[in-house]
Image (tube, rainbow, N blue to C red; front, side):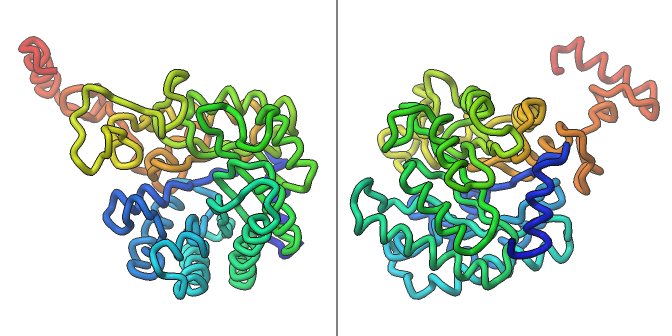
Length: 362
């Protein structure tokens, strides 16, 4: 194993305290105006590093254990699409350096290198498989040289691509967390068996942590998690859903529709994914409940993916019994001027609230 922190990460999986993962960088940076929806290339790493460092710090204050280097979609294929292949190595190296700067302030966090779906994998195509291996290898070479503790491979929709990720990670002797992205069909694109069966195959292939991430919100991811826990040791299962209210009828955030919502021209064909999803955002309580339930199942790597903000992460941490730096500012509605019953509220506050309630204003 590469280092002390890598070993500590694996030991953590055997503890009663799950690893908490904050992975909402892509959507959060887009919301804040530092990244373009559509291409979703993480140019913010080089163009606005201070903004990215601040988001890392916000997630750390909220309780994340994983400082995820923002290299999702920072691979050769994606940068080629926007004509910026020349930024490939500096972007990948700087992403890890930014994450490491924040870990100096939060030394209990693990620095994670990040690889993801390549969008070029073609099952049975040797040239494609070699290209995927090359993409993973160059990104992890830079990540390892910059000193990551663990690798997070996410949003993988092919069993074959997952196996390649495992093999490349083994070359670097780093722990690997791998999440499958499960689309509307409920299956992977190159495997007829269940997602749970695919997870067992990848775990046996050498992944340290295997499970699901992205696409599905808490409600439609939980049944998959329960099934996976029946096939793989629970403490080696990961689950980090999107922070959107998916349903059995609309099981992924790409399937979400609101026919009554007037969408502008920037939302083609009235399909809200990815820039019109605001009406579907989960509350912090829904994400917290997901964390609580997965902990009860024995899952030891849990968090949030697209759409997740620091307030969601804090709620997840607190639902698992933790107090974070940001918990100082967790809600205490007993102090609300009209709704509260805190001892420090004066009688006139209660009288004022009663008048507002009687007038139908509360």
